[in-house]
Amino acid sequence: MGELFHTLGKTYVLEILHMFLQEGGGPRRFVEIQTRLRMSPNTLSDRLKDLVEAGLLSRTAYNEIPPRVDYEGTPKALDLRPVFDSLRDWATRHNLSPEHVAPKVEATVPG
Image (cartoon, rainbow, N blue to C red; front, top):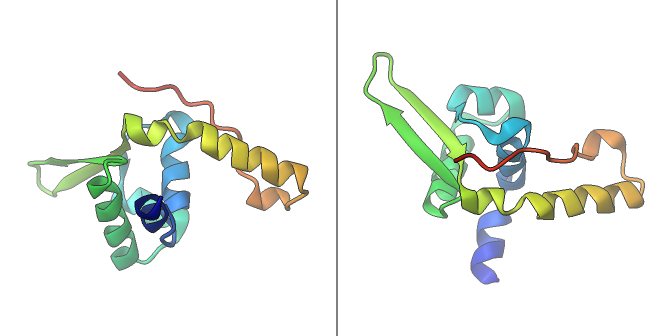
C-alpha cells in the first residue's frame, strides 16, 4: 500500500487520472492537460513522468516538427474507474458541493 499511496497521493495525480478516465479516455496532449487543470508546466511534467513510470499512462512521442507527444490512460489506469465512481458516490451521499463532485465515468476500455 505504501507504493500506492506514494504514487496516488501526490498533488494533482487524482485530477490527472480522472481526466483520462472521463470522456472516453482518449489521448491528450500536455497543453490540453495543463490548460484544463491549470497546473504549472514543471509540476505537470513531473506528474506525467510519475504516472508513466507507474504504468498508469502511456506516452507516445511522434517524430514531427513541431514535436508532438500524446498521453493516454492504460488498462491499469482504467481499472481505477470503479474507485473514482465510488468516491463520487461517497461525495454525493455526504453532500459535498457539486463543483467538487465529478460526473460518473462512463468510458469504455480501448482495444
